Image (cartoon, rainbow, N blue to C red; front, side, top):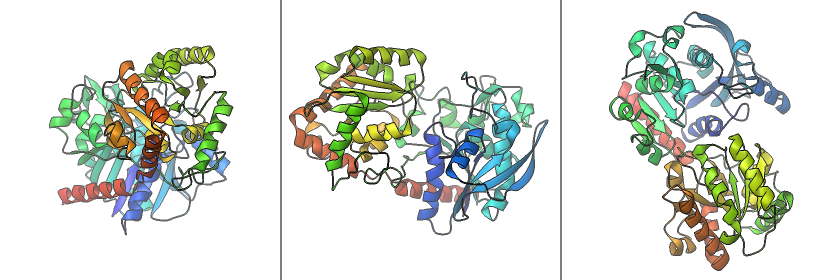
Length: 489
């Protein structure tokens, strides 16, 4: 079986979020669990990717040149590989007029590039045109990721390629919306511009176009697959998803256990694991010293690592920040985004520097040290398709305190305090996503840490022991591919 993945970013070459991690890890995981499966991931060669290639001392291999025509636009591109040949390779689309820019999707001011529809149509066209060459034969399955790859499945249908098609929705909130004039500009027929295909309130939705054409739509957790069918979480597409999409399935993301391993992570001041937990205390002390926090044996050190957006709920953390002493919690926050929230968090930290530390920005090394040094990981997302932070946190022994939404509900098990203390769960959840709900869950976690240390240690061990590898998820995706192929036969 030959599977072509199309994604707008892939780690470590270009990344803004979890999509890049999935695009990097899922295809080789599928190949590893399925003899004879060959995969390739095609993504743009951004300016940032060129920089990271140079920093890593990596070079692109011999590529395939192709002329891509999108409506009235014509581009000469080269699709070239990174790394050695094998059952999986990453291929980057070199087209400087479209991708040689400072940002992946937007400029320095945060404004989306006006030609994003063209940029990602070219990505999809280039991937489909070179697929037989890079896979060693015509693809059996075309797997697109998010709206940027929506045209990969749509064009496969329009061009009659015959491959089975899968589209994974990592976040339905990003629908790939463009004016109706984009339909002819992308060379699409007007008959796709209907409420049952690509039209969304008189706009072109590239995500909707991809979902309408796909044999199977997947989301990144079973709970999110159910949530998107509701008016509350369907982003205006719930009716379409219920009636016009052939099949929807939810599969939880995994993580790269070799890349996220506290027993070998070079960013940590000490190493540790389930069998040898001693280094966790050293990481905790080092993190507190690095951030200027005061800790003791009865006060859990909690961390929150997320984009500062309404989705992630860090405003709820800010709302509770004045109550940290009463809750008996010390807190560190790492993230960037909403400027007002950034300033609010900075002011709160300045008022209680020994209890609250705030770092604005994204620092990979610091994030790893925070996971390793934390007793608790706070993730009060208002919605969360899957989430990777809680998976990293559990791997590093930071017990999650999460909202019971999407993938957080699927990955964090909370059977109640007594069962948690017996090692039967992996964290603390709260149902009502508001400040009182978060306060309740944090209070439970802090009380167990303080009053039932043996029980808290059992929760930590259970969290660290959770299998968050890609193996099970990869097997589910391969089953999806095979079912889609049977449906095409």
